[in-house]
Image: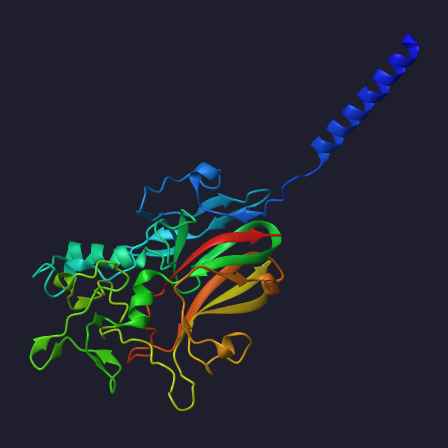
Amino acid sequence: MKLNKIFTLLAFGCIVLSSCSDEIKKKTLDFPNDVTFNKEENSIDIEVPELQFVQLDAPFTARAYNDGAITFNAKKNADGTHTGFALSNKNYRSYPWCVSINHGVKNPTKQLLQEATDSSLFSVYSGSYPNQLKNFTVVRVEGEEAFFTIDRPRVVEHVIIANCTFNYLAMTYGSVFSGNLNEATNVYEPMVDGKLSVVRNPNLPDPSTKKYDVWNLPDYYNFGQGEAYSRMPPKDKVTGKGNGYFKVIAIGYNAGKMTAKSEYYLAVRPGVATVVPYDKWDIIQNFWAKWDLSSLGVVDKVVFTLDGSEKAANGQLKTAPYFCMDGIRLK
């Protein structure tokens, strides 16, 4: 009788041990292999203060969740801009108050103008506050210097991409935003019959008319090539098509040889693009969205460039050469 009990206990113990062993080996959660930009998640070794940005003067590395790492090109420029990738967690989402007509500073200093410009350039227009993804990168394109390299050749499944606040405001409203839109010129004009045409600052919930104003977007770095920013032309009311766009182009490389290109429209009117799904889009993006980069194939380097419809008289792109990126998924 005792012997039977012993065998029974041994059998039960084997079942328990087997169950525990199976439970330990079984993968309960399959986290994607993403590269993010948060120090507390052990991705980067750089501290980004809350609602601030950091410009790096040398390339930096971010680690993927499971395996792998990406090195991002970065450098500071003498004029206060950067080339390549900076880090930020800012959400500004409105015109800066300090350069408005009634509420602003009458004679703003260069430092104030720079700070107002930076507040918009280094913030993501994502529709959330604070940014739910915490830190992200702000990419400034200059030649072919906006690039990242991967520790070994891999497929980039996708990245998460968005407009910076500066470009969203410029493309949606222009350098000046008022209550008076000139339909013929597609520009908001500050005056109507000799009076300021004030309007509420976009996306601010306070409805008080005492805070209405004529709003301005300073171009401290002269990305507009000496010309004012005009809002992106709307689609034609008759044909339903337009000609405005702003897009990012990704170029993949492996061992120094180009693999393929992929493009993503951060703003586009119907009829501009020839590829699905962009041919139907009528949007100035105001949220984070996924950009599939798997078509680049196996790569060890990705270079980003820009193109757009808004160009100055000298042919250079007027839209500020910035966009926001996060959540790079590696296969």
